[in-house]
Length: 356
Image (cartoon, rainbow, N blue to C red; front, side, top):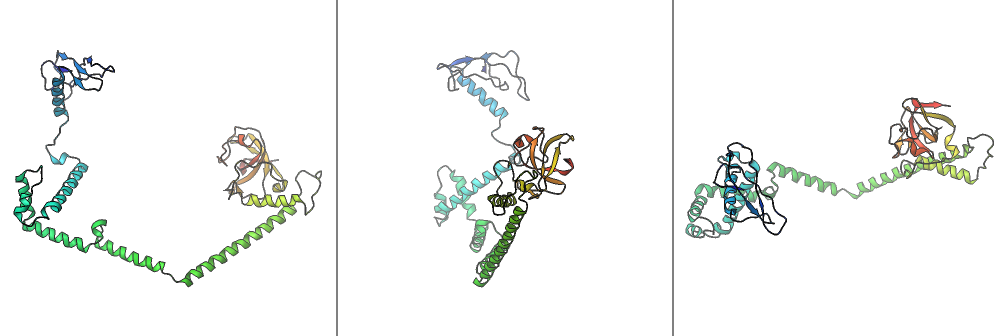
């Protein structure tokens, strides 16, 4: 909307675009006074037609444009009275653009012509000839020419610093680092062979330790082959398949931290529960939440976590409160005992264990 009589301090009206193909008519409301912009009372409003593209059309379009320009000049200044008020980032962009433009002029015009008259005559399009003449005369003053010669000599001496913004000391340090790197790469073959032989001996020692562990696990499996459910279960021969399975299971339990299973383990062999210490797991309030056994074999690792002092590795056999939270959870991706209804292993605080 625009005023019937031009008012330089009236508020900016607004219109609403129509969704029809023909222009629509809209009347705005008077805004509240703001700062120096004061709205006069009883100001007559004129309708403004806006087409479907949001462009003001009709008889009042020119008055709308005039009014909009007045408001923009009053509220959105296009210039600053003080250069210090301009944002530093904008100053940097203006300076860089000016320097790039100036370098282009020197390269394309000033450096191509030898005489001062030829340089002045080669005024680029869009530049005032008087300003161009002053620029050429300034660039050819003795002070500016001497500064250019000095900067050119510095650029020739600093082959890399000019592009990397490195000082002379930084360039020296870079050279020293390159020399040290070249010396490290040119180590003798004898030193390399010595390092390789030392690595091979270390691997051999690790293999020996693993073989000793395998023998120990096999012996434990043979000695603990009796199940924990009393004398009713018949014994097993030394060379039977159950002994081999128990040894394999013990070996898998020792390295379960390296490759944990996808789901909580269920139904472990009886020999992993020797001696079978039955316990009741207590919740935070001392209420029993589950029953199970204390694991004695591979008791220091559970689901890849080290069982620290004051804690025990427990095999859950019966869950009493499925929604009870797991101690120091989540463990193995589980946060409560509902994931152990079908049995499994977890870590529990020893002070919250009740031995049966």
